[in-house]
Length: 289
Image 1: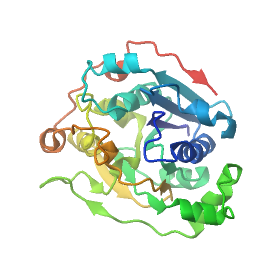
Image 2: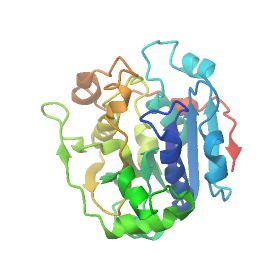
Image 3: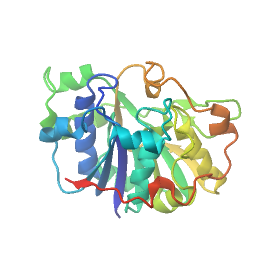
Image 4: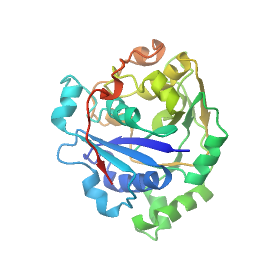
């Protein structure tokens, strides 16, 4: 079984300690997955990866794609209100090019599950179901307490095992609008898992939704509208490192326009993406690390 992961960020220190969160996240993804796409979207200077590359344990499975500001602006039709780190478009770039049997879309604040735990879970899953795995919560004080008051990035595996042993399943249901049966859990987009046939059938995330919020619920509704089942699961354990308000930068004023929740959730039927979703006609270079 080949497993792929797609994660998106930009070098703007969103939420504070972004480089540290990204270090834990990318090391765990590199360890767990056969193929990892890191898409750096619209960084004002240079890719976040270059700030942390000395901390990462590369093994030849990280595909690093950089979408600089001029290209990011072009791909969002020069819309000044587009999400500064446009998750829908960046994720689709990775998902369209992923070669795994199962593909995970996740976030830069997550410590991924152990490989053996994730494989065990997948072996028990239904190939025709779209899954969202509920994250568990950790804070810097918990991480630093384990490391003896520091952040010892080389000990990240021991930290993950410690968190697994001392955590409980997080069951936090959520609906974003009346009649929403698709969000299922709070922060449903932190770890969305499906067979590649599902991702290809629904054509990834809806590329019209270039603003912040609701795109994660939207992709889950699309899966249902295309005839697949939708389910939340609470294991294997993965962890979200707390970084403040959240809300994709909307609560912090970084992004000032949200997707229309009625368009994104209530009105969505089958995908409206074109066959060129993920900018598939464009040859996008990547660095293999």
